[in-house]
Image (tube, rainbow, N blue to C red; front, side, top):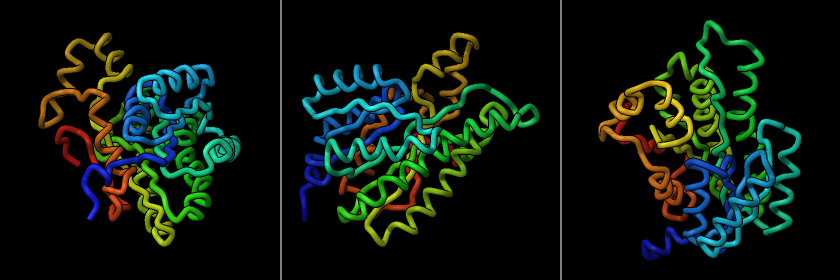
Amino acid sequence: MRATAELFDLTGKVAIVTGSTKGIGRAMAEGLARAGASVVVSSRKQDLCETVAKEIEATTGAEVLGLACHVGEWDVIPEFIDAVRLRFGRIDALVNNAGINPARIGPADMNLEYWRKVFSVNLEGPLRTSQCVLPLMREQGGGSIVNIGTMAAYSGGSNVCAYGASKSALLNLTKSMAMDWARWNVRVNMLSPGPFMSEMMQGGASTSPGFLDLVAGGTFMKRIADPDEIVGPVCYLVSDASSFVTGDDLSVSGGMMK
């Protein structure tokens, strides 16, 4: 039996984290790099990707590539994955973190343009990116895909209508991909965060007194998580420590009810 530390060791692995220039995405990218992986930092802006990649590389000593990709644009994703393959020769892990909730629109006011914009990034992006890494993972003998969800997928809410619905659909897609791709040892799981400190949280606090206390009160632990608290769970799902885990959803929510 391998030692516990070896199970979590990502040395020699290559991991892509979409939406990783800020928030929990950046925390996950840096955490995977600290665990030994070569990491691809990605978001829509190339200059920001390069800046963050250099910062993580300087902090961790890992090889980090900054490469922009708008995952809401279906046709550009294959070129993005090909560029990663050409740079590293392999892709062992994909963390589909990029997501949007651009405005607080309830179901009565939802329009088709807004609905499609949210779903193009939150659902179609992870589908297409996963489709594009699958052939390489299959040839390598396996890999790990982690879709980042949300506890809002379970509870709903008028302010997160399209966002929550897209993530609920992503959960179903996660289970379908896991079932279909297990034959190639490609594991697909979801990681569903609860309240983490972010720009969105800070924005809510600036406009709504008591907002942070209200959000924290929805957890058993009565607090909002630091972005670094997502690192352990994502390293678990990416590494061999979770070698018999697929089609699952791991909530990191301080005890919020599903």
